[in-house]
Structures are given as C-alpha cells and as structure tokens.
Length: 178
Image 1: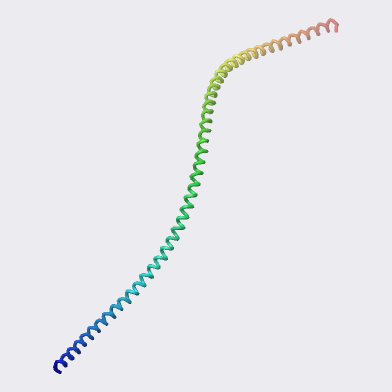
Image 2 (image 1 turned 90 degrees about the horizontal axis):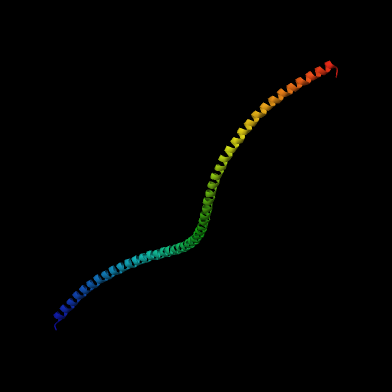
C-alpha cells in the first residue's frame, strides 16, 4: 500500500474519529438529557412517594377515625339493643295494664248495669213514696185543719166554761156561798 493510501486511510480514520467523536458527543448529550430526565423522574417519583406517604398518613387517620366510628356504632347499637329490651318490657307492662283496664271496664259495665237497675228501683220507690207522702200530707192537712177546728172549738168551749165559771161565781157570791 502506498503512502498516499495510508494517508488517505488516516484521514478517513480521523474523519471517522471526528464523526465518532461527534456521535459520542451527541450520545453524551443524549445521556446527559436522559440523566437529566431521569433526575426529573427521580424528583417526580420522590414527589409522588411523598404524596403517597401523605395519602398513607391520611388513610391511617381515616382508618383510625373509621375504627372510632365503628366503636361508636357498636356502643350505639348496644344502647339501642338495651332500649329495645326496655321497650319490650314497657310494652309487656302496657299489655298487662290493658288487661287490667279491660277487667276494670268489664266491672264498670257490670256496676253501671246494677246502678241502672237500682236507679229504676229507686225511681219506682220514689214514685210510690211520693204517692204515699202526698197521701200523708193530705191526711196531715186534714188533721191540721181538724186540729184548727178543734182548737177553735176548745177555745170557744173554754170561753163558755170561763163564762159559766164567772156566772157560777157571780151566783155563788149573790147567794153568799162564797
């Protein structure tokens, strides 16, 4: 091979080296851009991880509150169960009271019937007694009238007796018996 060919090969090699260096420089730029992008992605991942950790904390807080709510619901359900039992007891007692009231109502109806019967009997007795009392009042009125008449007769007789006594006294005094 000739010197010229060697020189040409060297020139070609230099040219290729420049191209390779240029390509390597481009690749370095690409790698730097990739590394920059990867750094950005790392930052984004850190930001995402930070947000996820915040979300994890929020989920823990929410789960804690939900657990508290579950306990409160259990407590409320327990109290509601107690209230249900109390309502059952109250309803049972109310049912007993209803039975007592029914019994009382039945007795009141029986007493009402007896009172109605007594009222009718009393009305009959009052009617009969009213007639008897009227008859007694009528007889009393007649007797009182008769008594008035007898009193007047008695007064009249007393006056006559008094008059006769006075006459007898006058006659005895004239005759000198006194």
